[in-house]
Image (cartoon, rainbow, N blue to C red; front, side):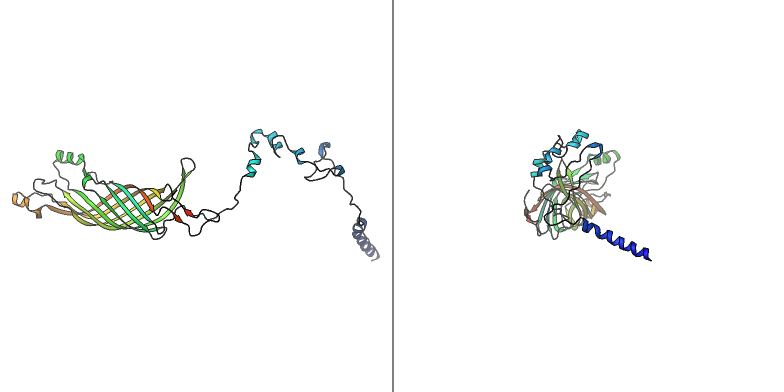
Length: 328
């Protein structure tokens, strides 16, 4: 028990000894420990801002390599990795450290009008082509939904293929044909996807993919093929539904190229394939028309899109940035 007390007293004395032994009086300088030399017998370089003997401050330039500011060792080890930038100029450039998690839309479509002139060609009729110019006008209720009207004119551009005439002449078989005059429809559009891609170097293209559907009218008439000496048809409008999908590629905030595929679906009236032997019956218009047919007129439409007004303002503008989406 006596030995335990002696050990505790010795430990307490040793614990208090450094505080007493190394305490310095007021006005006395603290002792400076000498640094051991580095491996190989070389002295270690002093830290930045340290003072040498006599209070002289070390210059950082003495420890820089020959390849540039602070990169001497890199240039000596691998010259190919040696920086070639002018560090003074690079340091003088302004730096925006702001990282925006959500970027602004490139184009705002809400409450803007869109005019879309286009040219359409038929994709699924090998006997008669129905190309023609058209125009669409849309108003955007939201950023992704729009309502609009479109119209197309066909009459002077209907083109019967030479293939059909060759079949009639070779096989003496007539195929009922139809030509179009005009079409008009009211439409609803929805944009399910949008994005951007790079092209032509660093140029960024923004695009929208959209779906469209509507209802309207399509004016058609049969082409007199079976009995052209007696039959002459007039144009009649038919109720037509349409569905399609398209792609817009924007070149600026108000101008875009448009590629669209649309199917116009309607009940068409065909020419009768029978010819009465009596000339009076042949001249009777009641004998001219035959069956009706569900017709799909699939068209590819290529055009441009112009948004009006040309400029817009963001509802939540960037801080310190131009808040107007100009006609760029």
